[in-house]
View 1 (cartoon, helix red, strand yellow):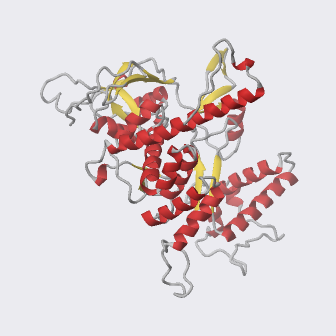
View 2 (cartoon, rainbow, N blue to C red):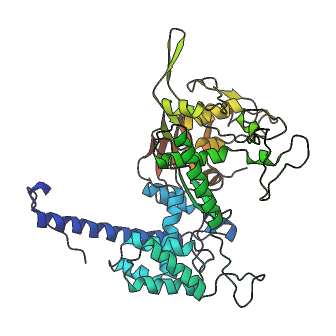
Length: 495
C-alpha cells in the first residue's frame, strides 16, 4: 500500500522542511516503482494478446557480439508476434528494440523468475533490478533451462534482488556448472573436461558517439593476446612521448590502438621477389640494410603497392554549412556527423583528414528543396542520396537507425503493371514518394496494418493498427490526436 504525502495547496515544495521533503521524495519513488511494476504486467498482457502465427513470425533481436537472432525471452516463455512490439513502443515513446526488451523482461520474470516477479509486484524489489536479472538469464550462454532459471530466481529472491552485476555473473556461471549446461570438449581428458563457453568478443559501440568524436570499445580476448596488446599499447604510447607528444597517457594509448588498426602487418610476410621472407628464430622478419637498420616496413611509409590491398577504408559523412567570401569558401565551426548522429567540430575533421594516408572526397551539394525523379522502379544513387540526407534516420516513429543503412521505400506502392496497362503510375520513383525505412520497419509497413503518408517533403504521418497517429520529421516524433476507434484497421492487400 503506497501512502501519498498530502501537502496544503498553498504550500509549495519550498515550504517543506527537510524531513517532509525527504518523505515526499521517498513517496514519489514508491509511486514510480509501482508504476514500473504495473507497466511490466501490462506488457506481459499485451504479449498474451499477440501470439505469432508461426515460429518464423515470432519477435526476436540480435544481441551485440552474436551472429544470430535470439528470442526475446528464455526457453519456456510464450512466443510473441514480431510486429506487435512496434505499437507498444510508439505508445510509450521508445524504439521497437526497447519495446522488445520490455516485453521479453516481463515474460522472463513472469514465467521463469516467478519469485522475483512476485517481489516486484509486492513492492519489495524495484522493476529495474528485476529487469537486470531477467536480461542476464535471457542472454546467458549457454541458455539456462527452466530449472536453472528457477535456481537463479531462488538465489536472487532470497536477498530481495539486491545483487550487483559481478555477483549476478558469478551466480549465472555457477548455475551453468551446477546444471551441466556447458558442453564438454571431447578432445580433452574425459575426467577433467572444461566448459566450452567462449566469451571472446570485440564490440564497438558506434551508435553512441561522444561529442569529442570518440566511441567506446569493449572486448574480451585471450590472456596472451591481452598481454601482447597491453605491451604494444605501452610501447606505442612511449614512442609518441619520445617524439614529443604532450597528450596524457590514456590518450596516447588510445591513439596507439588506432595505429595498430591501420598497420599493414601482412606486408611483413610479403616478399616482392616472390620468395619467403627472411626470418629470425622466433619467426619474425629481420630484413636489414648494411647498417643493420630495419627496412621491412618501407611499404607502410607511403610506397604504393598495387598488388596489395589497402590497409583500411574508413568512410565518414560530415555536413557543414558553408558561405562564400569572395573566392573563398568559409565553413562553419560545427557540423553534423552521420555516423552516430552527433555534432562534430571542424578542427576535429581537419585533424582526422590531416593524415597523409587519408583520402578526402568532397561531394557536390544536393539541394534538398529540389524534387528529383526517375523513370521505372529502381532508385538511382542521386535520388537515394537525396532521401538519406533529407530523412537522416529511419522515418518510423521514434526509430533512430541511420538512413544510410536503411532501405528506401516507395510510400505509395509502385505499380509494376501500370505502364503495360496504360494507367498512370500511382507510386512514382521520386523524392516526394520515397522514405528511409530500416529493414524491420520496412517489413512492418509491408506486412502489417501500419500505414504512412508524406504530408510534406520529409514529413511523414503514420497510423498504427489501433488508430494511433504520429508525425515524424527531422526534429523527431510527435504524437497526434488519439485514435478515433478501438477497432483495429485491416491491412489492404499488398503485391
